[in-house]
Image (cartoon, rainbow, N blue to C red):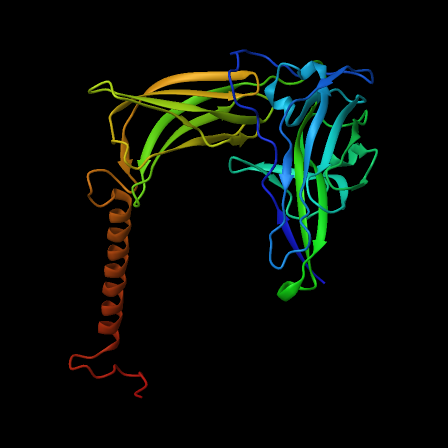
Length: 362
Protein backbone atom coordinates (compact mmCIF):
# COMPACT_ATOMS: atom_id res chain seq x y z
CA UNK A 1 0.00 0.00 0.00
CA UNK A 2 1.31 3.38 -0.90
CA UNK A 3 1.94 5.69 2.00
CA UNK A 4 1.61 9.44 1.60
CA UNK A 5 3.21 11.42 4.39
CA UNK A 6 2.10 14.92 5.15
CA UNK A 7 4.72 16.30 7.48
CA UNK A 8 3.09 19.50 8.63
CA UNK A 9 5.24 22.46 9.59
CA UNK A 10 3.30 22.90 12.79
CA UNK A 11 6.29 22.71 15.09
CA UNK A 12 5.95 25.20 17.87
CA UNK A 13 7.66 28.57 17.43
CA UNK A 14 8.75 30.78 20.24
CA UNK A 15 5.94 32.99 21.46
CA UNK A 16 6.31 36.62 20.44
CA UNK A 17 5.85 39.56 22.69
CA UNK A 18 7.98 41.76 24.92
CA UNK A 19 11.11 40.10 26.24
CA UNK A 20 13.42 41.67 28.76
CA UNK A 21 17.04 42.10 27.74
CA UNK A 22 19.21 39.78 29.78
CA UNK A 23 22.50 37.95 29.86
CA UNK A 24 23.46 34.50 31.00
CA UNK A 25 20.98 31.64 30.93
CA UNK A 26 17.52 31.01 32.29
CA UNK A 27 17.87 27.22 31.99
CA UNK A 28 18.63 25.61 35.33
CA UNK A 29 19.90 22.06 35.74
CA UNK A 30 17.92 19.91 38.16
CA UNK A 31 17.93 16.44 39.61
CA UNK A 32 15.08 14.00 39.84
CA UNK A 33 12.81 16.29 41.85
CA UNK A 34 11.22 19.23 40.08
CA UNK A 35 8.27 21.61 40.12
CA UNK A 36 6.01 22.25 37.15
CA UNK A 37 3.59 24.94 36.08
CA UNK A 38 0.79 25.18 33.56
CA UNK A 39 1.95 25.94 30.04
CA UNK A 40 -0.38 28.20 28.11
CA UNK A 41 0.93 27.73 24.58
CA UNK A 42 -1.41 27.19 21.65
CA UNK A 43 -2.24 23.71 20.44
CA UNK A 44 -0.74 22.59 17.14
CA UNK A 45 -3.22 21.01 14.71
CA UNK A 46 -3.12 18.54 11.82
CA UNK A 47 -5.77 18.21 9.12
CA UNK A 48 -5.31 15.75 6.22
CA UNK A 49 -5.45 16.61 2.53
CA UNK A 50 -8.88 15.92 1.04
CA UNK A 51 -9.60 13.92 -2.12
CA UNK A 52 -12.83 11.95 -1.83
CA UNK A 53 -11.65 12.12 1.76
CA UNK A 54 -12.25 9.73 4.61
CA UNK A 55 -13.95 11.23 7.66
CA UNK A 56 -11.82 14.14 8.77
CA UNK A 57 -9.01 13.32 11.19
CA UNK A 58 -8.26 16.61 12.89
CA UNK A 59 -6.11 16.55 16.01
CA UNK A 60 -3.77 18.76 17.99
CA UNK A 61 -0.95 18.64 20.53
CA UNK A 62 0.22 21.10 23.19
CA UNK A 63 2.32 21.43 26.32
CA UNK A 64 0.15 21.30 29.45
CA UNK A 65 2.86 21.57 32.10
CA UNK A 66 6.45 22.72 31.85
CA UNK A 67 9.23 22.93 34.47
CA UNK A 68 8.80 25.94 36.75
CA UNK A 69 12.47 26.85 36.15
CA UNK A 70 11.36 28.02 32.69
CA UNK A 71 8.31 30.01 33.84
CA UNK A 72 9.72 33.30 32.51
CA UNK A 73 10.69 31.92 29.11
CA UNK A 74 7.94 32.33 26.48
CA UNK A 75 9.48 29.53 24.42
CA UNK A 76 8.69 27.07 27.21
CA UNK A 77 4.98 27.49 26.48
CA UNK A 78 5.31 25.72 23.14
CA UNK A 79 8.69 23.92 23.16
CA UNK A 80 10.51 21.45 25.37
CA UNK A 81 13.65 23.36 26.32
CA UNK A 82 16.05 22.66 29.16
CA UNK A 83 19.65 22.31 30.32
CA UNK A 84 20.28 19.20 32.41
CA UNK A 85 23.31 17.63 34.00
CA UNK A 86 24.21 13.95 33.36
CA UNK A 87 21.99 11.65 35.42
CA UNK A 88 19.12 14.16 35.67
CA UNK A 89 15.45 13.27 35.17
CA UNK A 90 12.81 15.70 33.87
CA UNK A 91 9.09 15.41 33.19
CA UNK A 92 6.65 17.32 30.99
CA UNK A 93 2.89 16.89 30.61
CA UNK A 94 1.60 16.97 27.04
CA UNK A 95 -2.01 16.91 25.84
CA UNK A 96 -3.55 15.67 22.60
CA UNK A 97 -7.05 16.52 21.39
CA UNK A 98 -9.34 15.03 18.76
CA UNK A 99 -10.96 18.00 17.05
CA UNK A 100 -12.64 15.91 14.34
CA UNK A 101 -15.83 13.94 13.98
CA UNK A 102 -14.44 10.39 14.09
CA UNK A 103 -12.32 8.41 16.52
CA UNK A 104 -8.57 8.70 15.97
CA UNK A 105 -5.69 6.45 16.94
CA UNK A 106 -2.52 8.42 17.61
CA UNK A 107 0.99 7.16 18.04
CA UNK A 108 3.14 9.33 20.35
CA UNK A 109 6.91 9.10 19.94
CA UNK A 110 10.16 11.07 19.88
CA UNK A 111 12.20 11.43 16.68
CA UNK A 112 15.37 13.23 15.67
CA UNK A 113 15.78 16.76 14.29
CA UNK A 114 18.61 19.02 13.14
CA UNK A 115 19.20 22.74 12.69
CA UNK A 116 20.35 23.68 9.20
CA UNK A 117 20.01 26.71 6.95
CA UNK A 118 18.24 28.80 9.58
CA UNK A 119 15.54 26.17 10.12
CA UNK A 120 14.60 23.52 12.65
CA UNK A 121 14.24 20.41 10.47
CA UNK A 122 12.74 17.05 11.47
CA UNK A 123 14.76 14.10 10.21
CA UNK A 124 13.84 12.84 6.76
CA UNK A 125 13.01 9.33 7.93
CA UNK A 126 9.74 9.06 9.81
CA UNK A 127 11.05 7.33 12.94
CA UNK A 128 14.68 8.48 12.76
CA UNK A 129 16.45 8.44 16.11
CA UNK A 130 19.43 10.22 17.56
CA UNK A 131 21.11 9.93 20.94
CA UNK A 132 18.68 12.40 22.51
CA UNK A 133 15.49 10.62 21.48
CA UNK A 134 16.62 7.34 23.06
CA UNK A 135 16.48 9.11 26.45
CA UNK A 136 12.79 10.06 26.06
CA UNK A 137 9.82 7.93 27.09
CA UNK A 138 6.06 8.57 26.95
CA UNK A 139 3.75 6.72 29.33
CA UNK A 140 1.01 6.36 26.65
CA UNK A 141 2.71 5.65 23.31
CA UNK A 142 -0.65 4.87 21.68
CA UNK A 143 -3.77 6.95 22.33
CA UNK A 144 -7.34 6.42 21.08
CA UNK A 145 -9.57 9.49 21.21
CA UNK A 146 -13.27 9.81 20.54
CA UNK A 147 -14.46 12.95 18.73
CA UNK A 148 -13.90 16.14 20.75
CA UNK A 149 -12.04 14.31 23.50
CA UNK A 150 -8.59 15.01 24.93
CA UNK A 151 -6.01 13.07 26.88
CA UNK A 152 -2.85 14.01 28.73
CA UNK A 153 0.32 11.95 28.98
CA UNK A 154 3.71 12.29 30.60
CA UNK A 155 6.97 12.74 28.69
CA UNK A 156 10.09 11.78 30.68
CA UNK A 157 13.74 12.26 29.83
CA UNK A 158 16.45 10.38 31.74
CA UNK A 159 19.89 11.69 30.89
CA UNK A 160 22.56 8.96 31.16
CA UNK A 161 25.40 9.64 33.60
CA UNK A 162 27.88 9.27 30.76
CA UNK A 163 25.95 11.55 28.36
CA UNK A 164 28.16 13.88 26.30
CA UNK A 165 27.98 17.62 26.80
CA UNK A 166 26.23 19.74 24.20
CA UNK A 167 22.78 20.51 22.83
CA UNK A 168 20.69 18.05 20.84
CA UNK A 169 17.35 18.37 19.04
CA UNK A 170 14.25 16.31 18.46
CA UNK A 171 10.45 16.33 18.24
CA UNK A 172 7.66 14.74 20.26
CA UNK A 173 5.24 13.65 17.51
CA UNK A 174 1.54 12.81 17.61
CA UNK A 175 0.85 10.81 14.45
CA UNK A 176 -2.39 9.57 12.96
CA UNK A 177 -3.28 7.90 9.67
CA UNK A 178 -6.35 7.34 7.52
CA UNK A 179 -7.13 5.46 4.30
CA UNK A 180 -8.29 7.55 1.36
CA UNK A 181 -11.13 6.48 -0.95
CA UNK A 182 -12.23 7.13 -4.53
CA UNK A 183 -9.54 7.57 -7.16
CA UNK A 184 -6.89 7.61 -4.40
CA UNK A 185 -7.94 4.26 -2.94
CA UNK A 186 -5.22 2.18 -1.27
CA UNK A 187 -3.35 5.32 -0.24
CA UNK A 188 -2.75 5.82 3.46
CA UNK A 189 -2.48 9.44 4.51
CA UNK A 190 -0.18 10.07 7.48
CA UNK A 191 -0.53 13.30 9.45
CA UNK A 192 1.64 14.35 12.36
CA UNK A 193 2.11 17.38 14.55
CA UNK A 194 4.82 17.89 17.08
CA UNK A 195 6.55 19.81 19.82
CA UNK A 196 10.19 20.77 19.36
CA UNK A 197 12.87 19.56 21.79
CA UNK A 198 16.00 21.59 22.58
CA UNK A 199 17.96 19.78 25.31
CA UNK A 200 21.45 20.76 26.47
CA UNK A 201 23.57 18.52 28.69
CA UNK A 202 26.34 19.86 30.89
CA UNK A 203 27.42 20.74 34.42
CA UNK A 204 26.12 23.64 36.49
CA UNK A 205 23.33 25.75 35.07
CA UNK A 206 24.09 24.87 31.46
CA UNK A 207 25.70 26.95 28.71
CA UNK A 208 24.67 30.58 28.29
CA UNK A 209 22.44 31.98 25.57
CA UNK A 210 24.15 34.80 23.71
CA UNK A 211 24.04 36.35 20.26
CA UNK A 212 25.28 39.40 18.40
CA UNK A 213 23.75 41.36 15.54
CA UNK A 214 25.86 42.03 12.47
CA UNK A 215 25.34 43.90 9.21
CA UNK A 216 21.89 44.97 8.02
CA UNK A 217 21.43 44.84 4.25
CA UNK A 218 18.59 45.21 1.75
CA UNK A 219 18.00 43.68 -1.67
CA UNK A 220 15.44 44.06 -4.44
CA UNK A 221 14.55 40.91 -6.37
CA UNK A 222 13.80 40.93 -10.10
CA UNK A 223 10.08 40.80 -9.29
CA UNK A 224 10.43 43.95 -7.18
CA UNK A 225 10.16 42.25 -3.79
CA UNK A 226 12.26 43.86 -1.08
CA UNK A 227 13.99 41.87 1.65
CA UNK A 228 16.05 43.22 4.55
CA UNK A 229 18.50 40.82 6.21
CA UNK A 230 20.10 41.02 9.64
CA UNK A 231 23.21 38.89 10.14
CA UNK A 232 23.05 37.11 13.51
CA UNK A 233 25.98 35.36 15.18
CA UNK A 234 25.14 32.73 17.80
CA UNK A 235 27.94 33.30 20.30
CA UNK A 236 26.40 31.19 23.08
CA UNK A 237 26.09 27.49 23.78
CA UNK A 238 22.38 27.02 22.99
CA UNK A 239 20.31 27.20 19.82
CA UNK A 240 18.52 30.45 19.06
CA UNK A 241 14.87 30.49 18.02
CA UNK A 242 14.65 34.05 16.76
CA UNK A 243 11.66 36.27 16.16
CA UNK A 244 11.47 40.05 16.04
CA UNK A 245 10.69 43.20 14.10
CA UNK A 246 12.21 45.81 11.80
CA UNK A 247 11.05 49.43 11.77
CA UNK A 248 12.17 51.94 9.11
CA UNK A 249 12.42 55.73 9.28
CA UNK A 250 13.18 57.74 6.14
CA UNK A 251 16.34 59.84 6.40
CA UNK A 252 14.93 62.47 4.03
CA UNK A 253 11.40 63.22 5.22
CA UNK A 254 10.95 61.24 8.46
CA UNK A 255 8.45 58.81 6.89
CA UNK A 256 7.99 55.78 9.14
CA UNK A 257 7.23 52.24 8.00
CA UNK A 258 6.64 49.14 10.06
CA UNK A 259 7.13 47.36 12.28
CA UNK A 260 7.58 44.39 9.94
CA UNK A 261 7.85 40.87 11.36
CA UNK A 262 11.10 38.98 10.88
CA UNK A 263 10.91 35.47 9.46
CA UNK A 264 11.35 33.00 12.37
CA UNK A 265 14.90 31.66 12.17
CA UNK A 266 16.76 28.99 14.15
CA UNK A 267 20.55 29.15 14.52
CA UNK A 268 22.69 26.47 16.14
CA UNK A 269 25.54 27.35 18.57
CA UNK A 270 28.61 28.75 16.84
CA UNK A 271 26.78 29.44 13.58
CA UNK A 272 25.85 32.66 11.81
CA UNK A 273 22.84 33.16 9.57
CA UNK A 274 20.85 36.08 8.14
CA UNK A 275 17.38 36.69 9.56
CA UNK A 276 15.18 37.91 6.67
CA UNK A 277 12.40 40.48 6.86
CA UNK A 278 10.09 40.51 3.81
CA UNK A 279 8.87 44.02 2.98
CA UNK A 280 6.24 45.45 0.60
CA UNK A 281 7.44 45.88 -2.99
CA UNK A 282 6.06 49.45 -3.07
CA UNK A 283 8.33 50.51 -0.21
CA UNK A 284 10.82 53.20 -1.39
CA UNK A 285 14.42 52.05 -1.76
CA UNK A 286 15.67 54.51 0.84
CA UNK A 287 17.98 55.48 2.39
CA UNK A 288 16.39 54.46 5.67
CA UNK A 289 17.31 54.36 9.32
CA UNK A 290 16.55 50.79 10.43
CA UNK A 291 15.67 49.79 13.99
CA UNK A 292 16.05 46.03 14.49
CA UNK A 293 14.84 44.09 17.54
CA UNK A 294 15.34 40.31 17.76
CA UNK A 295 14.68 37.94 20.62
CA UNK A 296 15.11 34.30 21.50
CA UNK A 297 13.15 33.39 24.61
CA UNK A 298 13.97 35.93 27.32
CA UNK A 299 17.06 37.23 25.53
CA UNK A 300 16.87 40.14 23.11
CA UNK A 301 19.08 42.56 21.22
CA UNK A 302 18.32 45.79 19.38
CA UNK A 303 20.36 47.66 16.80
CA UNK A 304 20.13 50.78 14.62
CA UNK A 305 21.73 50.92 11.17
CA UNK A 306 21.53 52.70 7.83
CA UNK A 307 19.71 50.72 5.16
CA UNK A 308 19.26 51.15 1.41
CA UNK A 309 17.89 48.56 -1.00
CA UNK A 310 19.91 47.58 -4.08
CA UNK A 311 18.97 45.33 -6.97
CA UNK A 312 20.29 41.78 -6.81
CA UNK A 313 23.28 41.43 -9.14
CA UNK A 314 24.81 44.88 -8.68
CA UNK A 315 23.92 48.53 -8.40
CA UNK A 316 23.13 51.17 -10.96
CA UNK A 317 21.64 48.76 -13.48
CA UNK A 318 25.07 47.92 -14.98
CA UNK A 319 26.52 44.47 -15.46
CA UNK A 320 27.76 42.89 -12.23
CA UNK A 321 31.54 42.82 -11.89
CA UNK A 322 31.84 39.10 -11.16
CA UNK A 323 29.96 37.87 -14.26
CA UNK A 324 31.97 40.28 -16.45
CA UNK A 325 35.25 38.97 -15.06
CA UNK A 326 34.05 35.41 -15.62
CA UNK A 327 33.30 36.16 -19.30
CA UNK A 328 36.69 37.83 -19.76
CA UNK A 329 38.50 34.85 -18.28
CA UNK A 330 36.60 32.44 -20.52
CA UNK A 331 37.51 34.50 -23.61
CA UNK A 332 41.18 34.56 -22.59
CA UNK A 333 41.21 30.79 -22.16
CA UNK A 334 39.59 30.30 -25.57
CA UNK A 335 42.10 32.68 -27.16
CA UNK A 336 45.04 30.83 -25.61
CA UNK A 337 43.67 27.49 -26.78
CA UNK A 338 43.28 28.85 -30.34
CA UNK A 339 46.91 30.03 -30.42
CA UNK A 340 48.13 26.63 -29.26
CA UNK A 341 46.08 24.85 -31.93
CA UNK A 342 47.39 27.13 -34.69
CA UNK A 343 50.99 26.64 -33.58
CA UNK A 344 50.51 22.90 -33.52
CA UNK A 345 49.08 22.89 -37.06
CA UNK A 346 51.95 25.02 -38.39
CA UNK A 347 54.50 22.57 -37.03
CA UNK A 348 52.67 19.68 -38.73
CA UNK A 349 52.08 21.34 -42.16
CA UNK A 350 54.57 22.18 -44.94
CA UNK A 351 54.82 25.53 -46.70
CA UNK A 352 51.90 24.78 -49.09
CA UNK A 353 49.79 22.81 -46.62
CA UNK A 354 51.19 19.37 -47.48
CA UNK A 355 51.86 16.96 -44.58
CA UNK A 356 55.47 16.83 -43.42
CA UNK A 357 57.55 13.71 -44.00
CA UNK A 358 56.31 10.76 -42.04
CA UNK A 359 52.78 12.07 -41.62
CA UNK A 360 49.92 9.83 -42.66
CA UNK A 361 47.60 11.12 -45.39
CA UNK A 362 43.98 10.26 -45.04
